[in-house]
Each structure stands twice: as C-alpha cells, then as structure tokens.
Length: 111
Image (tube, rainbow, N blue to C red; front, side, top):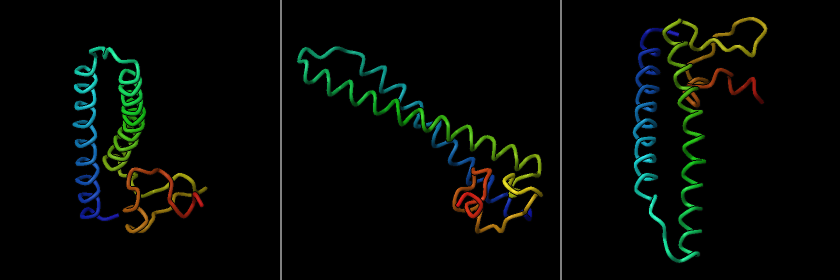
C-alpha cells in the first residue's frame, strides 16, 4: 500500500477513534446524570432498560476501539493491508480495505 493510502486510512481511523472516545465520555456523563431514582416502577424499568441499552452499545464500541487501535498499530508497523487469513501474506487492493479498514481479515477471505 502506498504512503497516500496509508495517510488516508490513518486519518480515517483516527477520526473514528476520536468519535468513539467522545461518545464514550457522553455515555459516562449520561449515566452519572441518570443515577436518580424514579418513584414510579414503570418509569424506573424504562430508565433501566435505556441504561442497559447504552451499556451494550458502549461495550461494542469499546471492542471497536480496540480493533481501530490495532489497525493504527499495523499502519505504524508497516503491516496494514497484509491480511493474516492467508497462509502467505497477501496485500489486498485499497478497495478491499475501505469497507472495514480496522479488520485484520479481508472480506473476501471471510466469506
């Protein structure tokens, strides 16, 4: 992969990571604000369901942040775009990496 493509992916992945970090902070702040008890049991159950939903989303985003950080490390190491699912390293065209740039496995391989 050439330097121009690496810069593009580094910029894209960094922007995604920053967005996820900002959303994580908002979730934590929202949970801190939602600590008050509601007197009605139905309202309390609705509030708890919303909190559980936010926590599930946050859990998925934390895993995604790990994948993005790993992809950024592969860019720095010079192994980005070389997919590990092959027995020998295979460099994939840029179009294969743009769909899910943080993935260590090529979409064609995972089918």
